[in-house]
Length: 124
Image 1 (cartoon, rainbow, N blue to C red):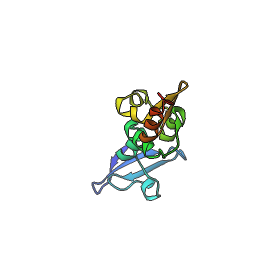
Image 2: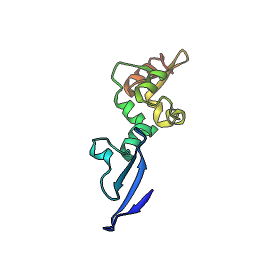
Image 3: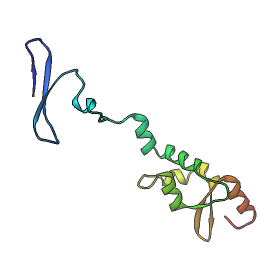
């Protein structure tokens, strides 16, 4: 419900989802949630960090260490890709240097480790 004060300022009345009571705020004034310290909304950068598959993959590649290989499932969890549509990104040509297969299992690691195992014919 909306209205106007005698002074000409406008107001909005809404029902609080927590307590069920009706509250009135002056339009243009900061809401109570902001003054109580609760953050309203989400920034675009936060959405990108948590939902952009390419950004999550970059963060996962930074976590790879020399001498350690991760199975595909471990790498997906490490990168935070679980539940996202990541298959086309992992199968892209840019990712070939980070992965290889041993006995039907795909492993991810830094390119020098993967290349070393491929030259020894341990990994395909």
